[in-house]
Amino acid sequence: MSYLPCEQVESQQNIDAAVIWLHGLGANGNDFMPIIPRLNLPDSFGVRFVFPHAPAIPITINGGAVMPGWYDIYALDMEREIDTPQIMASSQAIKALIEREISKGIASNRIVLAGFSQGGAVVFEAGLSFDKPLAGLMSLSSYFATYKTVAPHPANSSVPIHIFHGDHDDIVTAPMAQHAIEQLKQLNQTPEYKSYPMAHEVCAQEIADISAWLQKVLA
Image (cartoon, rainbow, N blue to C red; front, side, top):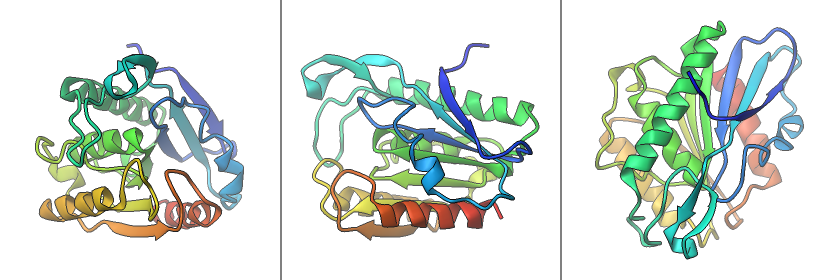
């Protein structure tokens, strides 16, 4: 089977958990690798970080320019009109990476999905519909693109979810994060939420909070 190309970082030799971390539009799998040392995870945490590269596709809102993207975006409104078949394909590709980690001996409930912006939208779709329990879903400056069409699987009916967002984000606005929370609650999920005085980015306090959350769900 062919998989998305990925970058990979292992915190130590004895790996018993994995974090599959998706980048945002126009970035690539190298984008979040520098954050890993800043998480300051305990030496006892054997975590494999997997950073897949999205395929290069034309992006309508960027004038059709070709760039790494998990799906095409047609309009930058609250609903974010998107190419649904593309996000579903990306979701399947991420599920394949989860299965690959399981085949390497990592239990599904020791696997976290994380995603920034577009990547977070794919995380919601892939994670909520995955047929084995996951350790958690982490959304960074993102939104719930497929809330109308997602088919949640009972295996992840109570998966831990944390949404991190910037109060001054003018690309994926704070109301879009609040909308995601509302829609997740409609699915009987109980997402945690924390915001920061930042734009569409990641800040130092957020990195510390991500570390704390990862340590909690992978304890």
